Length: 214
Image (cartoon, rainbow, N blue to C red; front, side, top):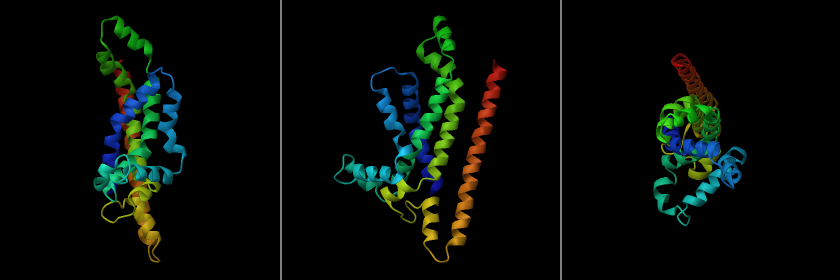
């Protein structure tokens, strides 16, 4: 359940995270600082608040109430909560990577006749790809560890919304649950470590490939 929720949350948020990162890195519009604050808000408010806001939005009387039967007390709702909590980390890593791209390279390509799409596809995206990858894996790892927003938004339903953190919480409520909680905690740590190590190895290989290509 945790892997399914984490993968769906990460894949669903990836296009939005990249678009927001691109906007925050490159756009020059009034009020951008407010948009930036809203994007990063889940990092600083209690996760319970984020879960409660999602509950209000997807409640039958809320603005997204038409989707309540497909979201509330279901794994899809857990994926939404995990994705919302992971989004700021993904955006931040991708934004820093996009900002690190040398704009002079893009300008040189434009003077040689390359269009915007070709410049993006052949210069901007490849150079920012390590950050995109790092943000994606960070988002996945954050999704695996999401607890507060999930339990507030879709509760702790076995077989539907009970991911690893919720299963650990449920085990700790039992007098004999310490051993189960320990095994689940060790499993969550191993999965998160594997994801982070894989991200770093892939990022190093991509950076090495770019250097050799140059």
